Image (tube, rainbow over all chains, first blue to last red; front, side):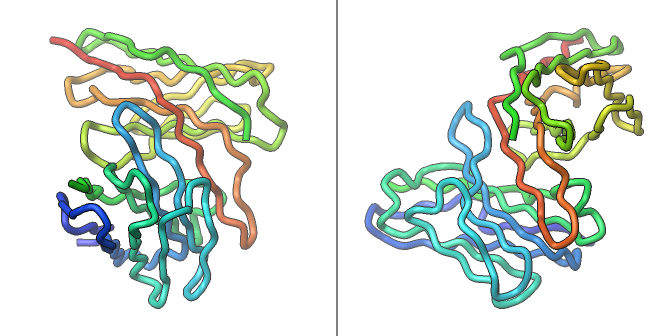
Length: 115
Length: 114
């Protein structure tokens, strides 16, 4: 089955620890995105990547880092510098053919709780 | 990107049409109107988009006013599974090597009841 997978669905970490969230897609999509969602709020863009080995900061990149070594993978690291990391994290991708439609395909999300 | 204004919540009876309004009075000429929805604890799902003409697909219809300052998403026969948060987003379409960015506001919570 083609799609975007995020793992794990729920993640718990202690304060001060870095944690990496996985995002994998087998849709051959070019662009990938990371969003953060807080309760009752909309999505906010953290980072996005148009091609392998290239990525740009979104609106709330502080305290986060990403890599794009492979087209299929776009992992997000939540560092200890992120002051309020507890949130629902969503990964998305866009195929080159759909770029003019701004149609983004989303994964199921990872709910991170920092204790 | 232009901002949008949506009602916080709406109710709809199952089997009836759900009409979700969106105001985007500062929309620019090159900006499209997109609709996404998010079912509880899942990722958002693309529904439909349009520039100035009305659009219809298998999920919904999009009606854009002639001055493009507002639009309405129509779910013709709402079901219980349509209960979700609906986001109206205005964004310039991506082109060439530029990939689009979407700004999700708080959306409208649509509750479909039996």
